[in-house]
Image 1 (tube, helix red, strand yellow):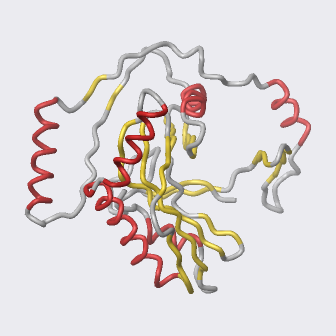
Image 2 (tube, rainbow, N blue to C red; image 1 turned 90 degrees about the vertical axis):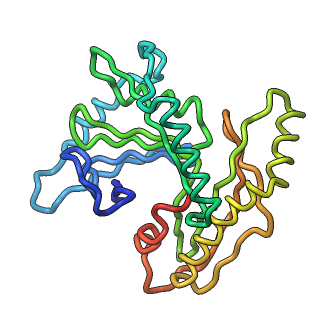
Length: 258
């Protein structure tokens, strides 16, 4: 397995720690599946044989990271409210004028601490708070890390069978099960949410059709619930052409309109 990632924009200015694209094959890989733990050692033929007992002792002595001992921090919003409102108003004007069909705005929160912020405990908190998401922890060099918890799986390919999803359209969770169900029903019927979701479905269809021998979408979107929000979700499956690779799909899909 190779691990890594690449930027939304391939022409983006890269940083030393996070180049525009970076993939690596780990020397030591630990995977867990179906209650079993597997170790894989990757090394070149001309390298000295790895001392497996050294790694075994290090793993046995490692302490679990639960993320509960992290000091509390107060993040600050880099965009002021007036500037953010102006961006929203400008984006809506572009959509109303048909210059854009969809736009995703984002804000940055920043937290500072006198001590080094350990990515392991922070990732553990994300795993605890959002257990049904895909968790990423990537530290290309000391003092730099990217951690993430995303509900979207960009693409999965197994024996030529492709799976991805359209995840777009968002509403909050309800305080009670009845309120939660009512919000989900409202989202399924809301023209704005349906339109937003359809844009992503159409883009995925147009992107994947040249790469697949067949492609199928669920007839109607379902609901994908997270602890704080709920989304519209449509499962997408297809058969990848024999001359195409999963990285062809990733390069074509990334980034999706979501």
